[in-house]
Length: 319
Image 1 (cartoon, rainbow, N blue to C red):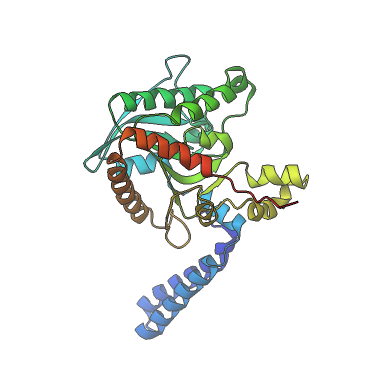
Image 2: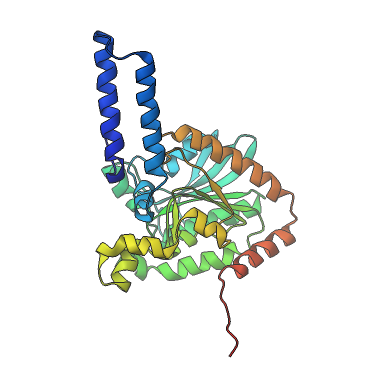
């Protein structure tokens, strides 16, 4: 069991309650009412613990190894999925999955960053860190979606674009910048779903969208808390302070008009009740896509442009 530090008290209580129930089956000591009271105390404990989470504790939930990944969402919300490979220039980047999909009765083009769920798949997927060819594959698929008038869904979950030498040699910055430029003008609806980490240009490279929806415990930031702490305080151990200062959680980003909507997660995170999260995500995407399809192309792209022009607020003081 992958238990987080703030969950230790809950885990111990659950373990004790389970033992009591097992003992009660063999030799009835506790009445049903007493067991129910203990279960009520457990529920209250969970609500109390999860209502007082720090920014760093929420990031730990976001990075939980059992948290659903992009492939899980594709499997559970898409009735059909046909994958497309390669960027037609260099190779296929396994950190990003792209293809035609059906969600309920609507056709989509899905582009998803995949971290992997065990050691083998994480290495295969490069921990969700895309190479330049991954961004070029994503753009190729978006252009294909534009050609066939299909809405695009991007699923964001990455600690950042791959920072290695070979990625820089193949034009990492150029690939991301090109995607930002091209996505601003793609003539079909684009929706982005933030399911986990959304770090830096690695996330933004597939995140220029008409609508951005974010799971409650996901985060979206120009830099990771560890990276920020290393720069500002010269100490990665100050990551909790950095996480608080960055204002990278859904409710903060909603206030700043950076994300459009938030999807609630079960107590403790999406990994506790993933099926309920899949259903919420599916419902949201189908409804929002239907709304965006009603907007004419010119207005759609103008709204997208204005959406990003408005991000970033500042105050001027009179001298």
